[in-house]
Length: 170
Image (cartoon, rainbow, N blue to C red; front, side, top):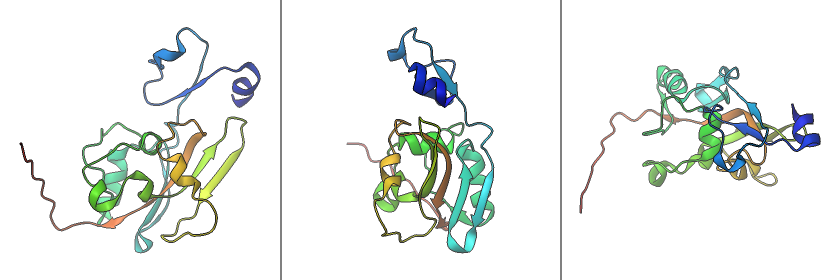
């Protein structure tokens, strides 16, 4: 697939709605890439507050796995059908960003398939990582322009005893 992208210049389209590619591509031929089969837990270390999952895992499934261990990932109001890879690639703003930080703070490491077919691993599954550039922060919000996310290592939090939301109109 990557040969076709590189040699023929066919754009690759990723995402949950492969049947509705970006309108900017018009009628150009394109290659649809799905990560649905990458939906497993690869490594889960509850004591270290980290989990590594495939990019095709749905956020609802991830939330269930994490909650069963008494942990939490601040994902308020994200669509349940969104994949972890899509969440990382789009890096949407959320209501917990002020307290727990944006998406890039939760991503400790990830694996990408670059457009030339090479697989690269960025980051380390540790909370403090000061060696070299933090490429994982560039990947968050890149909308798959740097490559296709295949695995993600996330930072977890102890589950809060209570969450309260206040809505102020003004």
